[in-house]
Length: 197
Image: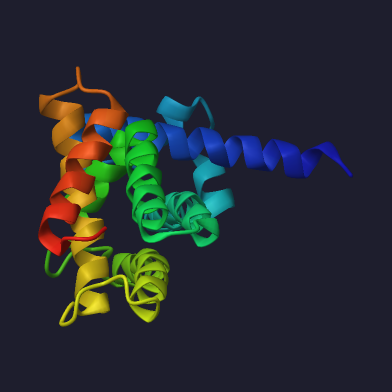
């Protein structure tokens, strides 16, 4: 194996990190390729070589972030009972958003913007994340662990949206709370609404 794929991967990671860093301080819309390249410490042409355009970079950034989040959520597939399943889903999302708070900000600012520049990409990525949550909630429903009348699709979107907003609130307004405390607050809310989980 040559060193080129490793260098290309490292360069892409630098560009992702630089874009998130800049987006966290001023948002995505006004960013320029020059600013992203300078922040990453690479030539402007590197962005075009790796992604074709700023929009290509942001599209890849969104896909990359959702792939990381999806991997965290898939750990719930091995959970044994309903408590463990919901615990793993909530904890996976909180851990991810704590590690990548700017990505969470980007999702909140762009996901529900209609019509947003990256709406189509984000809609597909949202579906990918909620389908993982939905599959786990469907597993609970099939086992009789969800109350009658709960719509799995709506519950999956609700859990994702709740944890996303709670994670941002935690990072911005209550950073002194531990992830365990935040997770337990969300789980208490879920248990209170459903009665058994």
